[in-house]
Length: 187
Image (cartoon, rainbow, N blue to C red; front, side, top):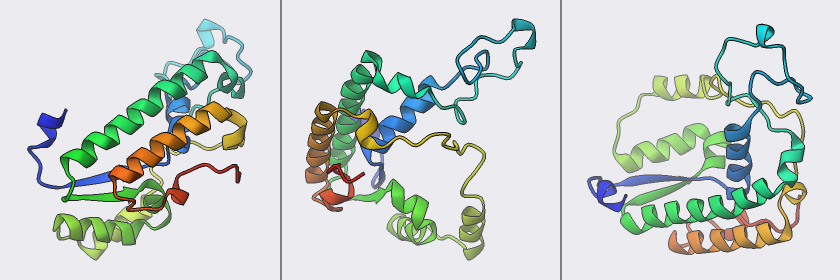
């Protein structure tokens, strides 16, 4: 992967809190299939929707977060999360801009302005306005239930994830404080 990255001179590294990222990707990858009703019962095949699986709007059943599959998923994916960021940060040590995912959600236009300036890209005010107007897009998953971090991540998960965050933030030279990412049972 590093060889492919070296063809670029700069990188914008969008970093998402891994607690949120793990939960979101788990929902995306294991969301309900169209042949199941909300309660998990099968739908008559003749009445099954003809549309492909809609991963963007699906939510997994809450009980899936209390399985060995979830445990294995968290432990494997946090290693992927960490190694991916470490590769990017190592490849672009002095020519990268770290952007928090939450800043894209909460401060879109100022964040886009900083990115444009960093990349030396001319962007019109109309383009910023258009982007802001269409920021939700079509694939926003509406939460049907609330899951606190402490509800779905075990103490072991939290320790593993916090350790990965610390390592990534150290490699990023603490461009954001650890408090922006670490979970400290403040849910």
